[in-house]
Length: 448
Image (cartoon, rainbow, N blue to C red; front, side, top):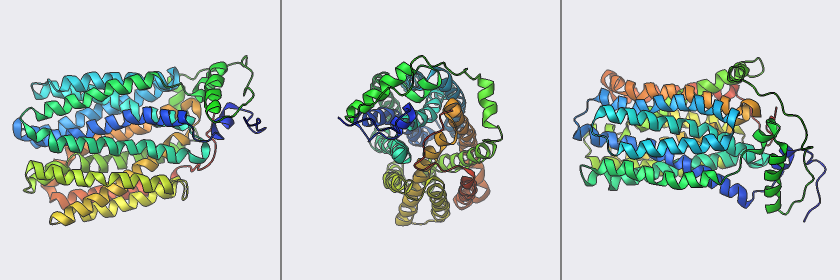
Protein backbone atom coordinates (compact mmCIF):
# COMPACT_ATOMS: atom_id res chain seq x y z
CA UNK A 1 0.00 0.00 0.00
CA UNK A 2 1.18 3.55 -0.72
CA UNK A 3 0.91 6.56 1.53
CA UNK A 4 -1.67 9.26 0.93
CA UNK A 5 -0.36 11.97 -1.36
CA UNK A 6 -1.06 15.40 0.20
CA UNK A 7 -2.38 16.88 -3.07
CA UNK A 8 -5.17 14.30 -3.09
CA UNK A 9 -7.29 16.47 -0.87
CA UNK A 10 -10.48 16.21 -2.89
CA UNK A 11 -12.44 13.57 -4.73
CA UNK A 12 -11.67 15.22 -8.06
CA UNK A 13 -7.94 15.35 -7.43
CA UNK A 14 -7.90 11.71 -6.36
CA UNK A 15 -9.78 10.66 -9.49
CA UNK A 16 -7.42 12.67 -11.71
CA UNK A 17 -4.31 11.10 -10.23
CA UNK A 18 -5.41 7.48 -10.38
CA UNK A 19 -3.65 5.06 -12.72
CA UNK A 20 -5.80 3.18 -15.22
CA UNK A 21 -7.39 0.31 -13.26
CA UNK A 22 -9.54 -2.72 -13.97
CA UNK A 23 -12.55 -0.68 -12.87
CA UNK A 24 -11.75 1.93 -15.49
CA UNK A 25 -11.56 -0.86 -18.05
CA UNK A 26 -14.90 -2.28 -16.96
CA UNK A 27 -16.51 1.14 -17.07
CA UNK A 28 -15.04 1.90 -20.50
CA UNK A 29 -16.16 -1.46 -21.90
CA UNK A 30 -19.65 -1.25 -20.39
CA UNK A 31 -20.12 2.21 -21.85
CA UNK A 32 -18.51 1.22 -25.14
CA UNK A 33 -20.86 -1.70 -25.78
CA UNK A 34 -23.78 0.69 -25.80
CA UNK A 35 -21.82 3.03 -28.06
CA UNK A 36 -21.20 0.18 -30.50
CA UNK A 37 -24.92 -0.60 -30.51
CA UNK A 38 -25.64 3.00 -31.48
CA UNK A 39 -23.23 2.74 -34.39
CA UNK A 40 -24.61 -0.62 -35.45
CA UNK A 41 -28.12 0.79 -35.60
CA UNK A 42 -27.14 3.89 -37.58
CA UNK A 43 -24.96 1.80 -39.86
CA UNK A 44 -27.62 -0.84 -40.42
CA UNK A 45 -30.17 1.70 -41.61
CA UNK A 46 -27.87 2.69 -44.49
CA UNK A 47 -27.81 -0.94 -45.68
CA UNK A 48 -31.48 -1.55 -44.92
CA UNK A 49 -32.45 1.54 -46.93
CA UNK A 50 -30.70 0.19 -50.02
CA UNK A 51 -32.58 -3.12 -49.66
CA UNK A 52 -35.99 -1.60 -48.79
CA UNK A 53 -35.76 0.86 -51.69
CA UNK A 54 -35.87 -2.14 -54.01
CA UNK A 55 -38.24 -4.35 -51.99
CA UNK A 56 -40.82 -1.67 -51.07
CA UNK A 57 -40.20 0.42 -54.22
CA UNK A 58 -39.40 3.48 -52.11
CA UNK A 59 -38.81 6.91 -53.61
CA UNK A 60 -35.65 8.83 -52.72
CA UNK A 61 -37.75 11.12 -50.53
CA UNK A 62 -39.26 8.18 -48.61
CA UNK A 63 -35.80 6.66 -48.10
CA UNK A 64 -34.52 10.00 -46.87
CA UNK A 65 -37.31 10.26 -44.29
CA UNK A 66 -36.69 6.76 -42.95
CA UNK A 67 -33.13 7.88 -42.25
CA UNK A 68 -34.04 11.34 -40.98
CA UNK A 69 -36.87 10.39 -38.60
CA UNK A 70 -34.42 8.46 -36.45
CA UNK A 71 -32.31 11.60 -36.20
CA UNK A 72 -35.35 13.63 -35.18
CA UNK A 73 -35.67 11.23 -32.24
CA UNK A 74 -31.92 11.51 -31.60
CA UNK A 75 -32.09 15.32 -31.51
CA UNK A 76 -34.87 15.25 -28.93
CA UNK A 77 -33.20 12.42 -26.98
CA UNK A 78 -29.84 14.20 -26.84
CA UNK A 79 -31.38 17.44 -25.54
CA UNK A 80 -33.57 15.75 -22.93
CA UNK A 81 -31.01 13.11 -21.98
CA UNK A 82 -28.41 15.69 -20.96
CA UNK A 83 -30.88 17.60 -18.80
CA UNK A 84 -32.08 14.39 -17.13
CA UNK A 85 -28.52 13.17 -16.53
CA UNK A 86 -27.59 16.42 -14.76
CA UNK A 87 -30.72 16.17 -12.62
CA UNK A 88 -31.06 12.44 -11.86
CA UNK A 89 -27.56 11.08 -12.47
CA UNK A 90 -25.60 9.59 -15.35
CA UNK A 91 -26.14 5.87 -14.71
CA UNK A 92 -29.96 5.80 -14.56
CA UNK A 93 -30.38 7.78 -17.77
CA UNK A 94 -27.66 5.65 -19.36
CA UNK A 95 -29.57 2.41 -18.68
CA UNK A 96 -32.98 3.83 -19.62
CA UNK A 97 -31.75 4.83 -23.07
CA UNK A 98 -30.77 1.24 -23.84
CA UNK A 99 -34.14 -0.08 -22.73
CA UNK A 100 -35.97 2.26 -25.12
CA UNK A 101 -33.56 1.45 -27.92
CA UNK A 102 -33.75 -2.34 -27.48
CA UNK A 103 -37.55 -2.54 -27.46
CA UNK A 104 -38.00 -0.24 -30.46
CA UNK A 105 -35.27 -1.95 -32.52
CA UNK A 106 -36.74 -5.41 -31.89
CA UNK A 107 -40.20 -4.16 -32.87
CA UNK A 108 -38.75 -2.65 -36.09
CA UNK A 109 -38.08 -6.18 -37.32
CA UNK A 110 -41.86 -6.73 -37.40
CA UNK A 111 -42.77 -3.53 -39.25
CA UNK A 112 -45.17 -4.15 -42.13
CA UNK A 113 -45.09 -0.75 -43.79
CA UNK A 114 -43.35 2.58 -43.95
CA UNK A 115 -45.62 4.36 -41.42
CA UNK A 116 -44.97 1.86 -38.62
CA UNK A 117 -41.27 1.81 -39.44
CA UNK A 118 -41.10 5.62 -39.23
CA UNK A 119 -42.69 5.61 -35.75
CA UNK A 120 -40.34 2.90 -34.49
CA UNK A 121 -37.28 4.61 -35.99
CA UNK A 122 -38.23 7.75 -34.08
CA UNK A 123 -38.34 5.79 -30.81
CA UNK A 124 -35.01 4.12 -31.57
CA UNK A 125 -33.52 7.55 -32.17
CA UNK A 126 -34.94 8.83 -28.89
CA UNK A 127 -33.02 6.17 -26.97
CA UNK A 128 -29.80 6.44 -28.96
CA UNK A 129 -29.74 10.23 -28.97
CA UNK A 130 -29.74 10.43 -25.19
CA UNK A 131 -27.00 7.84 -24.83
CA UNK A 132 -23.97 9.27 -26.63
CA UNK A 133 -23.56 12.62 -24.81
CA UNK A 134 -24.35 11.01 -21.46
CA UNK A 135 -21.81 8.24 -22.11
CA UNK A 136 -18.98 10.63 -22.96
CA UNK A 137 -19.82 12.80 -19.94
CA UNK A 138 -19.90 9.74 -17.68
CA UNK A 139 -16.55 8.32 -18.78
CA UNK A 140 -14.84 11.72 -18.76
CA UNK A 141 -15.83 12.20 -15.11
CA UNK A 142 -14.01 9.02 -14.09
CA UNK A 143 -10.98 9.34 -16.38
CA UNK A 144 -7.61 10.48 -14.97
CA UNK A 145 -6.76 13.94 -16.33
CA UNK A 146 -3.57 12.92 -18.14
CA UNK A 147 -5.34 10.31 -20.29
CA UNK A 148 -8.93 11.64 -20.30
CA UNK A 149 -8.93 12.65 -23.96
CA UNK A 150 -7.40 9.35 -25.02
CA UNK A 151 -10.01 7.32 -23.11
CA UNK A 152 -12.88 9.26 -24.71
CA UNK A 153 -11.44 8.64 -28.17
CA UNK A 154 -11.15 4.93 -27.30
CA UNK A 155 -14.79 5.04 -26.17
CA UNK A 156 -15.69 6.63 -29.50
CA UNK A 157 -13.70 3.89 -31.26
CA UNK A 158 -16.44 1.46 -30.23
CA UNK A 159 -18.42 3.26 -32.93
CA UNK A 160 -16.14 1.67 -35.53
CA UNK A 161 -16.75 -1.75 -33.96
CA UNK A 162 -20.51 -1.25 -34.22
CA UNK A 163 -20.39 0.14 -37.74
CA UNK A 164 -18.17 -2.74 -38.85
CA UNK A 165 -20.69 -5.17 -37.33
CA UNK A 166 -23.41 -3.37 -39.30
CA UNK A 167 -21.37 -3.68 -42.48
CA UNK A 168 -20.88 -7.43 -41.90
CA UNK A 169 -24.60 -7.90 -41.25
CA UNK A 170 -25.33 -5.77 -44.30
CA UNK A 171 -23.03 -7.87 -46.46
CA UNK A 172 -23.94 -11.35 -45.24
CA UNK A 173 -27.48 -11.16 -43.80
CA UNK A 174 -29.53 -8.50 -45.61
CA UNK A 175 -29.00 -9.76 -49.19
CA UNK A 176 -29.58 -13.40 -48.14
CA UNK A 177 -33.41 -13.19 -48.32
CA UNK A 178 -36.34 -10.82 -48.59
CA UNK A 179 -36.53 -10.86 -44.78
CA UNK A 180 -32.82 -10.15 -44.39
CA UNK A 181 -33.48 -6.60 -43.20
CA UNK A 182 -35.83 -7.94 -40.50
CA UNK A 183 -33.11 -10.27 -39.23
CA UNK A 184 -30.73 -7.30 -39.24
CA UNK A 185 -33.02 -5.36 -36.89
CA UNK A 186 -33.46 -8.43 -34.67
CA UNK A 187 -29.69 -8.90 -34.39
CA UNK A 188 -29.40 -5.24 -33.40
CA UNK A 189 -31.78 -5.70 -30.48
CA UNK A 190 -30.18 -8.78 -28.90
CA UNK A 191 -26.95 -7.16 -27.61
CA UNK A 192 -29.01 -4.40 -25.95
CA UNK A 193 -30.06 -6.91 -23.29
CA UNK A 194 -26.42 -7.68 -22.50
CA UNK A 195 -25.47 -4.00 -22.40
CA UNK A 196 -28.41 -3.20 -20.11
CA UNK A 197 -27.18 -5.76 -17.56
CA UNK A 198 -23.69 -4.25 -17.66
CA UNK A 199 -25.03 -0.73 -17.21
CA UNK A 200 -26.85 -1.53 -13.99
CA UNK A 201 -23.59 -2.83 -12.55
CA UNK A 202 -21.69 0.42 -13.19
CA UNK A 203 -21.24 3.02 -10.43
CA UNK A 204 -22.71 6.52 -10.49
CA UNK A 205 -20.33 9.38 -11.28
CA UNK A 206 -18.67 10.52 -8.03
CA UNK A 207 -18.32 14.03 -9.43
CA UNK A 208 -22.08 14.21 -9.96
CA UNK A 209 -22.75 12.71 -6.51
CA UNK A 210 -20.44 15.24 -4.89
CA UNK A 211 -22.14 18.09 -6.73
CA UNK A 212 -25.42 16.98 -5.16
CA UNK A 213 -23.96 16.74 -1.66
CA UNK A 214 -23.91 12.92 -1.63
CA UNK A 215 -20.31 12.87 -0.51
CA UNK A 216 -20.37 9.59 1.42
CA UNK A 217 -21.52 7.70 -1.70
CA UNK A 218 -18.93 9.48 -3.85
CA UNK A 219 -16.20 8.66 -1.33
CA UNK A 220 -17.05 4.93 -1.37
CA UNK A 221 -16.84 4.80 -5.18
CA UNK A 222 -13.52 6.65 -5.38
CA UNK A 223 -12.11 4.43 -2.60
CA UNK A 224 -12.96 1.31 -4.62
CA UNK A 225 -11.01 2.65 -7.59
CA UNK A 226 -8.10 3.49 -5.31
CA UNK A 227 -8.21 0.00 -3.78
CA UNK A 228 -7.78 -1.46 -7.26
CA UNK A 229 -4.61 0.60 -7.57
CA UNK A 230 -3.39 -0.27 -4.04
CA UNK A 231 -3.88 3.30 -2.89
CA UNK A 232 -5.18 4.23 0.56
CA UNK A 233 -6.50 7.76 0.91
CA UNK A 234 -8.20 9.79 3.60
CA UNK A 235 -11.81 10.85 2.96
CA UNK A 236 -11.85 13.71 0.49
CA UNK A 237 -14.42 15.85 2.30
CA UNK A 238 -16.48 15.62 5.49
CA UNK A 239 -19.64 13.54 4.85
CA UNK A 240 -21.77 16.20 6.52
CA UNK A 241 -20.86 18.97 4.07
CA UNK A 242 -23.94 20.76 2.73
CA UNK A 243 -25.11 20.15 -0.81
CA UNK A 244 -25.24 22.87 -3.40
CA UNK A 245 -28.66 24.10 -4.45
CA UNK A 246 -29.77 22.15 -7.51
CA UNK A 247 -30.09 24.06 -10.75
CA UNK A 248 -33.38 24.06 -12.62
CA UNK A 249 -33.49 22.99 -16.26
CA UNK A 250 -33.99 26.61 -17.28
CA UNK A 251 -30.98 27.81 -15.30
CA UNK A 252 -28.83 25.00 -16.73
CA UNK A 253 -29.68 26.10 -20.26
CA UNK A 254 -29.11 29.78 -19.49
CA UNK A 255 -25.70 28.90 -18.02
CA UNK A 256 -24.58 27.62 -21.42
CA UNK A 257 -25.00 31.17 -22.75
CA UNK A 258 -23.47 33.02 -19.78
CA UNK A 259 -20.56 35.28 -20.73
CA UNK A 260 -17.99 32.68 -19.66
CA UNK A 261 -19.38 29.97 -21.94
CA UNK A 262 -21.06 31.90 -24.78
CA UNK A 263 -18.28 31.67 -27.36
CA UNK A 264 -17.56 28.05 -26.44
CA UNK A 265 -21.21 27.08 -26.84
CA UNK A 266 -21.58 28.87 -30.18
CA UNK A 267 -18.43 27.28 -31.63
CA UNK A 268 -19.27 23.86 -30.20
CA UNK A 269 -22.78 23.91 -31.69
CA UNK A 270 -21.37 25.00 -35.05
CA UNK A 271 -18.83 22.15 -35.09
CA UNK A 272 -21.45 19.61 -34.09
CA UNK A 273 -23.89 20.85 -36.75
CA UNK A 274 -21.35 20.82 -39.58
CA UNK A 275 -19.78 17.45 -38.70
CA UNK A 276 -23.19 15.78 -38.37
CA UNK A 277 -24.37 17.19 -41.69
CA UNK A 278 -21.34 15.99 -43.64
CA UNK A 279 -20.94 12.63 -41.88
CA UNK A 280 -24.53 11.43 -41.97
CA UNK A 281 -25.20 12.91 -45.38
CA UNK A 282 -22.30 10.91 -46.76
CA UNK A 283 -22.30 7.63 -44.86
CA UNK A 284 -26.06 7.01 -44.77
CA UNK A 285 -26.19 7.35 -48.56
CA UNK A 286 -22.91 5.75 -49.72
CA UNK A 287 -24.38 2.23 -50.25
CA UNK A 288 -27.32 3.66 -52.22
CA UNK A 289 -25.05 5.99 -54.23
CA UNK A 290 -22.91 3.01 -55.23
CA UNK A 291 -26.01 1.04 -56.26
CA UNK A 292 -27.14 4.00 -58.40
CA UNK A 293 -23.67 4.07 -59.96
CA UNK A 294 -24.26 0.55 -61.31
CA UNK A 295 -22.86 -1.69 -58.59
CA UNK A 296 -25.13 -4.49 -57.41
CA UNK A 297 -26.29 -4.64 -53.79
CA UNK A 298 -23.71 -7.19 -52.63
CA UNK A 299 -20.78 -5.38 -54.28
CA UNK A 300 -21.95 -2.02 -52.94
CA UNK A 301 -22.10 -3.47 -49.42
CA UNK A 302 -18.65 -5.03 -49.90
CA UNK A 303 -17.16 -1.65 -50.84
CA UNK A 304 -18.84 -0.04 -47.84
CA UNK A 305 -17.40 -2.73 -45.54
CA UNK A 306 -13.86 -1.97 -46.75
CA UNK A 307 -14.42 1.76 -46.33
CA UNK A 308 -15.73 1.17 -42.82
CA UNK A 309 -12.62 -0.75 -41.74
CA UNK A 310 -10.57 2.48 -42.05
CA UNK A 311 -12.43 3.91 -39.07
CA UNK A 312 -10.38 1.96 -36.52
CA UNK A 313 -6.94 3.31 -37.54
CA UNK A 314 -8.51 6.79 -37.66
CA UNK A 315 -9.52 6.46 -34.03
CA UNK A 316 -6.14 4.99 -33.07
CA UNK A 317 -4.19 7.90 -34.54
CA UNK A 318 -6.58 10.46 -33.01
CA UNK A 319 -6.30 8.76 -29.59
CA UNK A 320 -2.53 9.19 -29.71
CA UNK A 321 -2.46 12.72 -31.12
CA UNK A 322 -5.09 14.15 -28.79
CA UNK A 323 -2.71 13.96 -25.83
CA UNK A 324 0.25 15.11 -27.97
CA UNK A 325 -1.18 17.94 -30.07
CA UNK A 326 -4.15 18.72 -27.85
CA UNK A 327 -7.88 18.74 -28.59
CA UNK A 328 -8.28 21.69 -30.95
CA UNK A 329 -5.31 20.95 -33.20
CA UNK A 330 -6.21 17.26 -33.54
CA UNK A 331 -9.87 18.04 -34.27
CA UNK A 332 -9.01 20.72 -36.82
CA UNK A 333 -6.42 18.63 -38.71
CA UNK A 334 -8.76 15.64 -38.99
CA UNK A 335 -11.58 17.89 -40.22
CA UNK A 336 -9.34 19.37 -42.95
CA UNK A 337 -8.36 15.81 -43.92
CA UNK A 338 -12.07 14.93 -44.06
CA UNK A 339 -12.72 17.87 -46.41
CA UNK A 340 -9.93 16.88 -48.80
CA UNK A 341 -11.06 13.24 -48.79
CA UNK A 342 -14.68 14.24 -49.49
CA UNK A 343 -13.67 16.19 -52.61
CA UNK A 344 -11.57 13.27 -53.87
CA UNK A 345 -14.32 10.71 -53.17
CA UNK A 346 -16.91 12.78 -55.04
CA UNK A 347 -14.80 12.74 -58.20
CA UNK A 348 -13.41 9.20 -57.85
CA UNK A 349 -13.84 6.77 -60.76
CA UNK A 350 -13.06 3.08 -60.70
CA UNK A 351 -13.06 0.54 -57.91
CA UNK A 352 -9.62 1.35 -56.50
CA UNK A 353 -10.22 5.12 -56.41
CA UNK A 354 -13.64 4.75 -54.80
CA UNK A 355 -12.36 2.40 -52.09
CA UNK A 356 -9.17 4.39 -51.47
CA UNK A 357 -10.79 7.82 -51.17
CA UNK A 358 -13.68 6.33 -49.21
CA UNK A 359 -11.26 4.82 -46.72
CA UNK A 360 -9.48 8.18 -46.38
CA UNK A 361 -12.81 9.88 -45.70
CA UNK A 362 -13.65 7.23 -43.12
CA UNK A 363 -10.20 7.53 -41.47
CA UNK A 364 -10.22 11.31 -41.08
CA UNK A 365 -13.91 11.75 -40.33
CA UNK A 366 -14.04 9.19 -37.52
CA UNK A 367 -10.80 10.50 -36.03
CA UNK A 368 -12.46 13.93 -35.94
CA UNK A 369 -15.49 12.43 -34.19
CA UNK A 370 -13.22 10.97 -31.51
CA UNK A 371 -11.61 14.36 -30.87
CA UNK A 372 -15.00 16.11 -30.82
CA UNK A 373 -16.42 13.74 -28.22
CA UNK A 374 -13.26 14.17 -26.13
CA UNK A 375 -13.40 17.97 -26.05
CA UNK A 376 -17.17 18.38 -25.59
CA UNK A 377 -17.58 17.29 -21.91
CA UNK A 378 -14.48 19.27 -20.92
CA UNK A 379 -15.99 22.60 -21.91
CA UNK A 380 -18.54 22.86 -19.08
CA UNK A 381 -18.55 22.42 -15.27
CA UNK A 382 -20.04 19.32 -13.63
CA UNK A 383 -23.37 21.01 -12.84
CA UNK A 384 -24.17 21.50 -16.54
CA UNK A 385 -21.75 19.10 -18.24
CA UNK A 386 -24.32 16.59 -19.49
CA UNK A 387 -26.73 19.39 -20.44
CA UNK A 388 -24.03 21.14 -22.48
CA UNK A 389 -22.95 17.91 -24.16
CA UNK A 390 -26.55 16.86 -24.81
CA UNK A 391 -27.61 20.15 -26.36
CA UNK A 392 -24.53 20.27 -28.58
CA UNK A 393 -25.37 16.76 -29.78
CA UNK A 394 -29.03 17.76 -30.18
CA UNK A 395 -28.10 20.71 -32.41
CA UNK A 396 -25.90 18.35 -34.38
CA UNK A 397 -28.81 15.98 -34.84
CA UNK A 398 -30.77 18.77 -36.54
CA UNK A 399 -28.13 18.63 -39.26
CA UNK A 400 -28.37 14.84 -39.41
CA UNK A 401 -32.12 15.24 -39.97
CA UNK A 402 -31.64 17.71 -42.79
CA UNK A 403 -28.74 16.00 -44.57
CA UNK A 404 -30.33 12.66 -45.62
CA UNK A 405 -33.38 14.52 -46.97
CA UNK A 406 -31.26 17.11 -48.78
CA UNK A 407 -28.93 14.56 -50.42
CA UNK A 408 -31.43 13.58 -53.18
CA UNK A 409 -31.92 17.28 -54.02
CA UNK A 410 -28.16 17.86 -54.30
CA UNK A 411 -27.74 14.71 -56.40
CA UNK A 412 -30.31 15.98 -58.87
CA UNK A 413 -28.78 19.48 -58.90
CA UNK A 414 -25.16 18.51 -59.48
CA UNK A 415 -24.56 14.82 -58.97
CA UNK A 416 -22.18 13.09 -56.58
CA UNK A 417 -19.35 15.57 -57.23
CA UNK A 418 -21.39 18.60 -56.07
CA UNK A 419 -22.74 16.64 -53.10
CA UNK A 420 -19.30 15.89 -51.70
CA UNK A 421 -17.99 19.41 -52.37
CA UNK A 422 -20.85 20.63 -50.13
CA UNK A 423 -19.82 18.11 -47.47
CA UNK A 424 -16.21 19.35 -47.74
CA UNK A 425 -17.35 22.94 -47.18
CA UNK A 426 -19.11 21.91 -43.97
CA UNK A 427 -15.96 20.17 -42.77
CA UNK A 428 -13.90 23.33 -43.37
CA UNK A 429 -16.35 25.51 -41.43
CA UNK A 430 -16.14 23.02 -38.55
CA UNK A 431 -12.32 23.07 -38.67
CA UNK A 432 -12.30 26.86 -38.26
CA UNK A 433 -14.92 26.83 -35.48
CA UNK A 434 -12.89 24.24 -33.55
CA UNK A 435 -10.40 26.96 -32.58
CA UNK A 436 -13.09 28.69 -30.52
CA UNK A 437 -13.18 25.75 -28.08
CA UNK A 438 -11.13 25.45 -24.91
CA UNK A 439 -8.33 22.90 -24.76
CA UNK A 440 -8.00 21.22 -21.34
CA UNK A 441 -5.38 18.64 -22.22
CA UNK A 442 -3.97 17.26 -18.96
CA UNK A 443 -6.04 19.66 -16.82
CA UNK A 444 -8.66 18.80 -14.21
CA UNK A 445 -12.33 19.08 -15.08
CA UNK A 446 -14.26 22.07 -13.75
CA UNK A 447 -16.21 20.71 -10.77
CA UNK A 448 -18.38 23.75 -10.08
